[in-house]
Every structure is written in structure tokens, then in C-alpha cells.
Picture 1: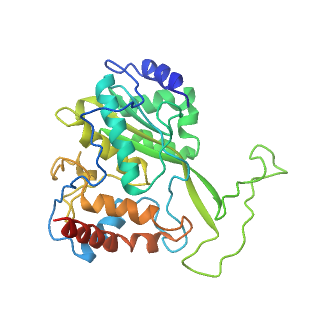
Picture 2: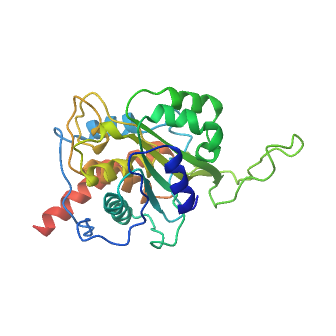
Picture 3: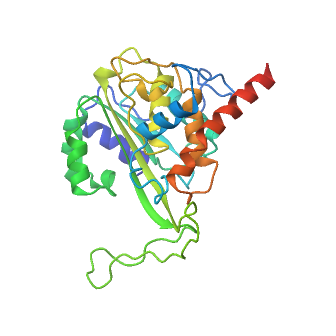
Length: 302
């Protein structure tokens, strides 16, 4: 989706003071990858870390048989519905987060957004209005999942569009519109329960936030929340978290970190620092190790 298309879409959604910006650098935006990370919540025991990782991860019912979705292409964030100055800060922050996690970042000003963050008056109504007009925004969702998404209450609606490929990156062959040539993925068998024959690539991510719910939140908080909802298939954290996470930002009764926490960074690094065809349970099992690495690096720098 090109920048001009996103700008047109923002007008169609009737956002307050819509603006789209591709970051060109901002002196107020965090630029140091070694920046301090906010640590919130209670004691981060391995059991608590595992429990929270499972709670915020979507589609891990068959966690021994499926990989976790991740970006393979460089990320390119775009913002709709915020003044240009705020959008620039948010985009710079998301790009910085990608570098911290280890995700390639596309060249500024020369890429088509594959991470889209929309600020809208009402997410439910916006999704319903866009189902037919902009079906490309929901291209990998089934009719049932789209109906569920449109019916979700609350100020946040987020989803990722994914593509299943072989572990070597081969695409589906065939055409879903032809009965005699159905989509088929040719893969070599894997002889390990950990290493799978396929992987799941994130083609694009969408995060839609209701404007009335973001009042009083900083651009960094919103960018970090969007990071956690777009870099992986996650869900919001609710009900008070034993391990602090920016995913609790919209939980009325929970803590609201000022930025991504140690857990959040460790969660994303566990996904992106290992092969894309490792099963979900193995990747989630690496989070505690990533947390220990962060603590060791911090202590070494003191």
C-alpha cells in the first residue's frame, strides 16, 4: 500500500486532523538502541514469564506443531490520523524498536508501509465500513475471523496478515479461484519436533486505535504498544500482570508502562533471534534466557 493510498484512506475514515508521515528523523525521538527499558510488575520468575508469554500470544493452541509469525521483509511503518509531528516521532520509535529487536528496517521515505497504525473515531465502525471497500487490509483473514474482529469491543483492534511458506521461503503454488488447481505448498519433511517444514511470514500488520482512548498517552507509549501488536501475533494483556508489559496500556485496572519493558524486548527477541521454522513452544521458552541476557548487559554497563 503506497503512502498516497494511506492518505486517501485516512480521509475516508474521517479521522480528526489526519496526517501521514514517513519519519525523516526527529531530535525528540529515541535514537539510542541501548536506551533504558522500564521494568514494571512483580517478580519475573520463569513460571510467570512463561504464563504471560502464553497469555499474550495468539494461535498457539498447537504450539508444538506451528511456528510463530514474524517479518521476513524490512519493516516500514506508517501512521494515519495523527498530526505530522506526532506521527514522525512514532515512526522513528517503531523503526528504532525494530533495530533493537533485530528486524531489518526499510529505507526511510522510499518504502511502502507494511505496518499501518490508524487513529480513528470508532474502530468497530471503521472496520465494518472498510470490509468491502478495502478488503486488502484483511487479505489473510477468514470471514469468521473478520466478523469476530469487527465485533470485538474496546478501543484497540489489531491484526496481522500472514503468508505460509516452506522453511526455505517457497510460496504456495496454484490459484484458490481454480478448483482444478488449488493452492499447494511443496515442502520437505522435517525429522524434528522442534524444526518444522513450514514458516509463517507477516506480510503486513494493522493496529487501529480509538482516538478517545489515547488521550494523555505519549507518542512513545503508543508507538511501543503498536510495536508489540504488529511485530508478532499478540493480544492485549488484561487483569493485572505479574510481569510488566506495554500490552497492558489499555487495561483500565493495570499498570501503564511508559515504554516497552524488559519482558517485551525479550519476547520479540526470542521470536526474531532464532530460525523462523522453530515451533512456538520452543521460541517462547527462550524468553527467560533473553531476560537474563538483558540483565547481564545492564550490569556490565554499570
